[in-house]
Length: 192
Image (spheres, rainbow, N blue to C red):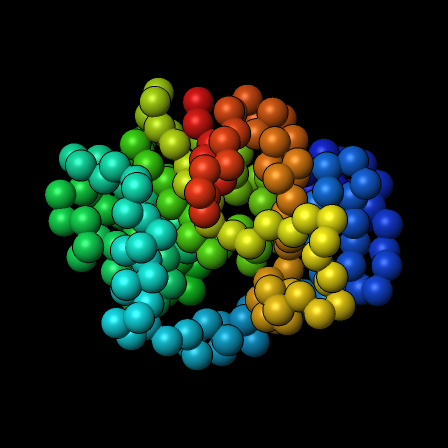
């Protein structure tokens, strides 16, 4: 199997394909869309979720920005929190309209999304084409490092989490696409 980020050969160990070059790790088994959909329906979008979203995005400047919330889930709450921004919501299951592809954005958010993607390079590459000249892609996911034990890591247990990233993975990804990469607080920020 070739790495989706850098095209190097990956090696299989304990149901995980690992790239020794960029560090991308992919699950061997991917559940069908109907099972993934059932898992997404079980997500809880209560007041705690809204507070969590507000907390992790508080340092992003949304003022008068055109924003794509890519993979927004069934209850996109950011457009209600940041009313002074113009939001487009996209989710493959819940907001599947591809009209988002015909706009340019100041900000593209991928909050708890990239770990669900089988082909992250293609998605990020396509999204980078939708950025305005000074636009940014904000990616929120859990990164692994040398101390991460994949046998017990809670983040791996979700059946819909199929790809895992280290800091190095994002630096390689950004370089290949021609973006700058910055690890900032809880976000990986990719910019032109």
